[in-house]
Length: 297
Ligand code: NAP
Image (cartoon, rainbow, N blue to C red; front, side, top):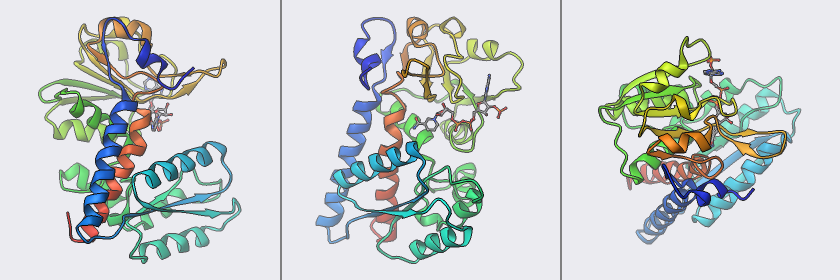
């Protein structure tokens, strides 16, 4: 299946929110921002990714991040550490990067190998360089409505809405999933945009009823096609964050795309929807930290 086969096969029903095209537009804006920064006498933004161990999906993600960041004009470095690295060694790497003036963004690729404390490593990252938005400082800023760095996937969901003229103000938004990475930060972002937000999770009693009442459904669960089209209000907007690989090797979302597109007014496909936005927002965050750190925000 091509990356955007759902996007390109759409002929009726919902508007297909094309994340590949949206991410390309964000990346082009970031590249233009980098050019302007350098042309104005600033230095090239620097992004460093710390990769511990040999986890195959992580290797793929890191290669994609490296390629996208290089294309956007960043100085990119990947620090590769052995799977049996000690906690102290990983923490020492983060401390070194915190102290390196040329590094504007630090990303520790998760998950870390068993035995390493990912929370402790994340918390060591200088909040001004925390381009994944996962430190307590940046989480607090998000909750308090202060300027900070926002996790890339939920930021990507908001960006898709913004770039397609979808306003969340006054809307009933149902977020399925309460992870620190996606569900909770998206709920905060939607609240900041004056949505009325309900967060559902595995203990929610009647998920279908919540979905039926929603103007916007955001699914960040990790269960293939959990949300059926028949659960949706006519004209709902659907943002499907889920990435689930089936036995047939195909990627599917948390929403049953074919039935959902008949009722929704707009929907992100999987693949080719929210997925490509994550790296684009990582680049946007890194440009932002670089501008701030160079006093050129
Ligand atoms: P996660 O940490 O596993 O959280 C999943 C959430 O879904 C939990 O809050 C869980 O509830 C809830 N849940 C599980 N089963 C449920 C059910 N039957 N009904 C209602 N809620 C249920 O996952 P995540 O990191 O947020 O990721 C979610 C999905 O998004 C995954 O498919 C992941 O691959 C994908 N993802 C994509 C991107 C991207 O597009 N770049 C980035 C990140 C994640 P409890 O809290 O009660 O356990």
